[in-house]
Structure formats: structure tokens, C-alpha cells
Image (cartoon, rainbow, N blue to C red; front, side):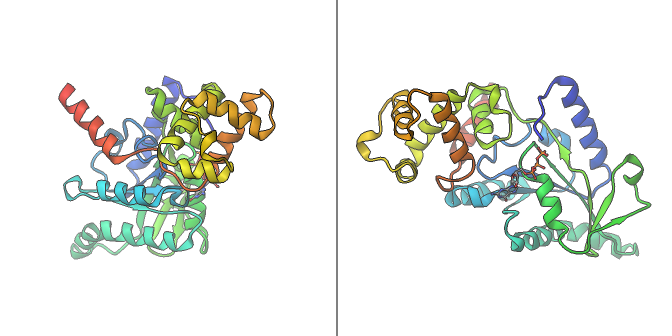
Length: 293
Ligand SMILES: Nc1nc2c(ncn2[C@@H]2O[C@H](COP(=O)(O)OP(=O)(O)OP(=O)(O)O)[C@@H](O)[C@H]2O)c(=O)[nH]1
């Protein structure tokens, strides 16, 4: 579901997310592993506040493994007091890892409750993230067996239901959907390329040119292999390169059609795994923001 975001939608999404947060013990902040920073909502820390959270980089099967490791190291630095894992909803084992992590984060709180004599209860969860990061897929995958709805609990009256995951967890059946970042053109192109925002917000050629420039810089071998091009075909100048590929595809001068094909191929991992955000860049940006304040 792709939404055009306007201030009214953003305010409503924020309000709804905050309402849901009140009902849960822990929030799963779902990100796209191919763009861990660009797929975060700009106000996420404010919205989640001190609520325990597990950052989950989803679609790890489509992302560059080395970069995913770097991102996990970055998010799991001790001083950040947060936990992050990478998963793919295609991998059932990853669902077990996710549950284990949630339990580990919640263990001290749950122990405190049982020490006080409170009967042990299921951990209540919700999933929160921008469009297209895989929220609905994750909900379905977590519920492979024992799909059941529990009644008589907060939330149910608000048109939501708790879904039971075994005996240990209850999950809100509707995820929190937040708006993506769009104040920055580069982030916008990354989001369009991976399908998180409508690619019609940009001219198709713009997104394809951005993608080609990125792959030429970081993953030239993937372009070479998938499009079967030799080194000579690589033009320094990306528009020229796009023109060369259009001819190679047999699309004449239809650069729009070639751009669509390139976007489709990259979005769907045809060229292999890739990551569009880098930890170093993110650290530079954080420093710039701090020094500007
Ligand atoms: N390769 C891959 N694709 C995935 C994974 N998880 C989800 N997807 C795909 O990503 C697309 C979006 O997934 P959804 O579950 O609809 O995402 P969502 O966050 O609920 O999207 P909205 O309803 O727009 O908020 C679908 O085509 C899924 O099949 C994953 O781990 N790997």
C-alpha cells in the first residue's frame, strides 16, 4: 500500500502509533536492510521514546552482507542501549531469532514482575515502520502455527486484535505505519528505487541514473555480470551509459522504458544483493547535525 503523505496523514499516523505504543511492552522497529537509515521515520526516536525496542533490518536476503554486519555493529554499540538484528521473512529460522531477542530484552522486566508475585504473562508486541519494509509479511510469518485471536484485552475495542504467537507473545494485528523521510532528494531516490515511495514522485530516468551511478561506483561487477557488458561499455558519464544500455536492451531511444527495467531489476534483486546506505556517511551526517546545533 503506497500512500501520498500530507501533514494531516502524518499527524494521524503519529497519533495512532502513539496510541498503539501504550498497549505494548516492546516495539519492533522494522527497517529495510538495504537502506537502514533512509528507511527510518524522521521522528522515530521521539515517537518510540523510552519504550523497549528491537531494531529489525528486514529483507537481509536482498542486502549486501558486509554492509549489514557494519550496520548491526553500529546499532549494537553499547552506548546506544538498543538491540538490532537482521532477518529475512523468507527464512523461518529468523523468526525464532527474533523471538529469542525479544525475550532477552524483556527478561529483566518480566523477572521483576514475577518477583513481585505477578503471574507470568505473554509479552505484548507491535511492529512499526514506513511503507513496504515488510510489516504485514512479518506478522504473517510470525503466526505460522497457532493463529489465534485473543479477546478481552486493551486494543480489541479500538478495532485491533491481539494475535497469539505461542504462549509467550501477543502481537497487535495491525502494524504502525509511519511516513518516510522525503526532505532529501538522495534519500527520496533510494526510497523510490527500493519501492518505499511512489517512483512517480521522481522522473523515472532520475531514479535510474541515480541507481546506475551508485552501482557504477560501488558494484560495477554486478552491472557487468547481469547486463553482460564489457568494460568498454562503461561510460564515465551516466546519461551516456543509460543510452548505451537502452540500445543494448533493444529499446531504441525509449529511455523511460529502459529506466523502468533498470529500476525493476535492481528493486527485485536481479543484480544481486546491495545496500544503499553506509555507516560512515551516517556518522558524518550525525556529526554535521551536532555541530550545526
Ligand atoms: N526479498 C524479500 N522480500 C520481502 C521480505 N519481507 C517482505 N518482502 C516483500 O516486500 C514487499 C512489501 O511487504 P509488505 O509486508 O507488504 O510490507 P508492509 O511494510 O506491510 O507495506 P505497507 O502495507 O505498504 O505498509 C512484499 O512484496 C513482500 O513480499 C524479505 O525478507 N525479503
